[in-house]
Length: 345
Image 1 (cartoon, rainbow, N blue to C red):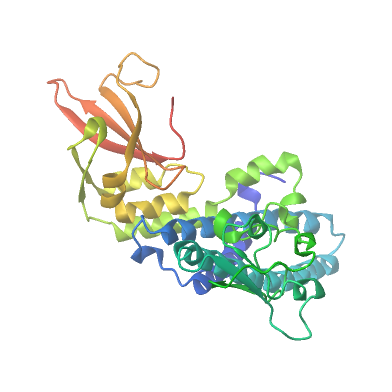
Image 2: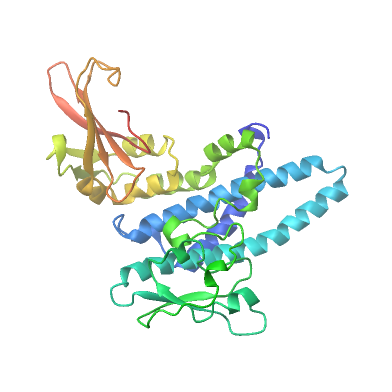
């Protein structure tokens, strides 16, 4: 597959931008206007990351096909075919992103409207298999929706509507096939395609580790530039509300923003945007680990008195890493060193 420098990042970027536009249009979400505690904040960040991941795997397959082409005519035919793919992918991403955003509403309103009804477009173009599901009504938490949430394939126009009608089971509904890439619930998994999608399954095992490492590169660059510009010279003062550092205050300076956004993370886009709501992030974070012994391997510098790790509420892979510096006079200073995707134990 080659190294990262030789990867066609320009094409990944243009493809990602096309995907990103569909996610934004379908969800109507503006992450810059949401609190990090709003479920749609996390949903949007995860969908954007997944769009980047899908575009990265897509480029690997495109690059592999171009490498096997024997002449320019064949290469042009491949590129033309992938342009056609792009339109289908955009439509599917719009549908799945819309389904993911609607699912957030379904779960919020499940007490009033506990069931979901499958509805087709009602015309002759509806797939026969999907037509059999028309009128199916099952609880929001029914396992069927885990693998059969429309759109159920490229071009599918079916949708779910929330209702308080009684359940209706259609004959053989559990035997309905779910196409690869669509055999999941976009709202629960917060993805645009499942891992059974062709671009994922066609990647050789030798390439997967690199692709997973590279996924999020383009969206991470965008979020880093945006957040650094948005928070430039704001110097927000945050106060830690619990744990060993309860009551401690820290100023989020330009240097802090630059340091945090410059570090790697499995979902850099979402991590970076947490900084736009950093006061609430710190306020609601819960301490999960600490390392105070200056002789431990965690504390490599003599001027560090302790490390304290706080988990961002509602995020499994977001940890605030605070370090406590101590000067020669014994004065301690709290610094937000990073927001990482794991902690040292």
